[in-house]
Length: 262
Image (cartoon, rainbow, N blue to C red; front, side, top):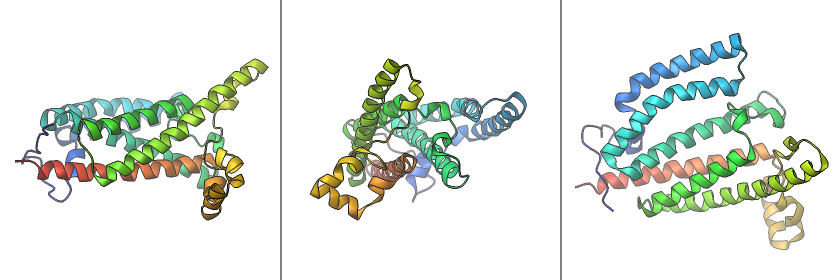
């Protein structure tokens, strides 16, 4: 499949093609204006109206969505569908990283309880959204590797990491549905089904069964956080690894796309 080269007019950062792709270009002014407006409006909504943080954050994100869509339409016209999809994934994964950093800070710096350390959009911190998001990322990575031919070493590592991460959330989602049915049958609030341990971390599957199997027991002894870390930390590091691999794969892919240009 042919890929459109980066036009000379926008390849101003010869050593950083990924930054060239992420640059908002003609959308930068409205993006900055609407971002500032979103921050101001969010502050008013929180302090004067009593809107929760997640609501104000959603309003601010809705404002910057307009110039973002224009930037992605430009990406499509300049470089084609795979590069545009990659650009969108980088932006969304970037915000997802900010969300995990916010949760990490709330718990480790502010000293909040893990249950209330839900980041900027707490309403989205639910199992079905985690499940849908991770499967979406995995399918998009598969699309980029097949249709877009993003097949460098970093991309293969990303595929393996995203697959493992998605399996973790699939296990969590299945456990969540099972627990919801059990709680509903007992007349108990299903909210208690949120935030259960997964495969890794404290009280997870590996902690419960790994110590009984020699091979897994050795892994647990060599890397204790695999069975002792709380869920918030487990998924913070899942996300860190996925983000680093995604940006590394994207950088290599975009640089290769430029080098292949006639």
